[in-house]
Image (cartoon, rainbow, N blue to C red):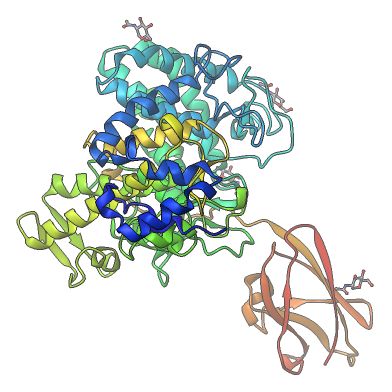
Length: 609
Ligand SMILES: *[C@@H]1O[C@H](CO)[C@@H](O)[C@H](O)[C@H]1NC(C)=O
Ligand SMILES: *[C@@H]1O[C@H](CO)[C@@H](O)[C@H](O)[C@H]1NC(C)=O
Ligand SMILES: *[C@@H]1O[C@H](CO)[C@@H](O)[C@H](O)[C@H]1NC(C)=O
Ligand SMILES: *[C@@H]1O[C@H](CO)[C@@H](O)[C@H](O)[C@H]1NC(C)=O
């Protein structure tokens, strides 16, 4: 039986009252009630509870639940993580379907960055022990040999460990190179605070040895591909690359003090190279940042990856800088709209929201994990980017609309034109009110579909909105708290983003895509003095050049052969040519086309035509 539940749900910023439900619909609903089998529709109709509260009071009440939710998953004393070693942050108490009974370096680092921000801003003195236990546990985990290597041979890129800090040895998407960067960022934030307190010994003896290992790993390995934050794609991930840039850039003042000058300058140079490479993710025709490059993927590239990257690179003193993808930069705002819009038609429950309203956000459109649902942390990240933008606009008393960001701003003021609008203009008032309302809309969606007792699992069902996948996801709770902080204007400390400059000229080579070997065999009869070459639409096939074309060997005449490395999964066109004394004879049309396998090698057999 199909019950049109979404029609009966409140809009994000309207609280549900009996008056809001047309009487006929209510009568019809009441007749259907006996047939409801899912608990959810009834919950959504209950007239008491958090869903009736305004976003303000929801954020206030859920914040304490979220902090308790984070702490419950941290060993050794957390209420939901029995057996976890001291300082270990479990991803979730869920041990089956899915089994998240591990510490992921990424999740734990993001969580601790949040705790460090709250503690160092004097907002919660009780967190010191938790933070320092994590720091101690990380010094141990860094030294644990694991399937990615040992501490000096790549082991720092291992994504997850067992709750007792031993290595996880099963098959996994490894390495994941964002972990060391995020861990260094959290620890450097704590180091700045400790130095401010005059506690140089803790920084020098405890923090810096761990930070230095991670930064060394980033500087040495950023130019290789690895698995993305969703652990699925081996390539170059925007989230990873921006995190790596931030880590090495934030390191500069420390490195000059704690490292030799050669290391410090090498890190600074790599920071520049990474920032240069980061710019290549921008798709200027589509006006969004591709989430992953250097891989054979047919995805659109629209992904909450890039929104998460922006909020975790937020620097409240960097204005709306686009090179570092600040939340209010024109590129990050255009990207926000593109990512949000990509989810509008994707989920059944999003059909209840208007075209410029917030919707439930997942990871990416093509997601099939648990059938592909919205995630709380992705929906909250979409809110947080807007709150961070509102903070920066307020602090600079203006906002700037460019051709790139115009479609984003037009959501709130359709007549808006590029220009700078000071805080005293009506345009500024309308746009900021609209952005605030959209941001609150994302939070209201989380409020609407939150679990029992304010629990935040990983996902909520794309049709019914029922919480699904892992319960009590630590990162979901942390994302609620960083959202709430941004909403309240409690922003993290600057990491020096305003001094970042993109090096001029050509970027140093970044990570290279994985390659596969293709052996081309062309059956071609030739006359004496004639040779066969291969040319085609990719650089490995000389970009259709006839003078730099790839030579084939006649050792197995009349089979002419050559083996070429091409990017895994690449689709390209090509033709063979015969060349004699510079005179080129082409094969007849059409161009040949081939798609390389995603791994391994292949032989391509053709006959001259
Ligand atoms: C790491 O592995 C390399 C290569 O196997 C070895 O030479 C080195 O001693 C190991 N380092 C540690 C700290 O175990
Ligand atoms: C420095 O910080 C550490 C860790 O919090 C603490 O144990 C130590 O007493 C502090 N030292 C000084 C001199 O404040
Ligand atoms: C990556 O950069 C490091 C440091 O410059 C260099 O030693 C290494 O050879 C590079 N690796 C690749 C695969 O380019
Ligand atoms: C090309 O020929 C080789 C050797 O005869 C064979 O193994 C391979 O499968 C052929 N490839 C294709 C694409 O037909």
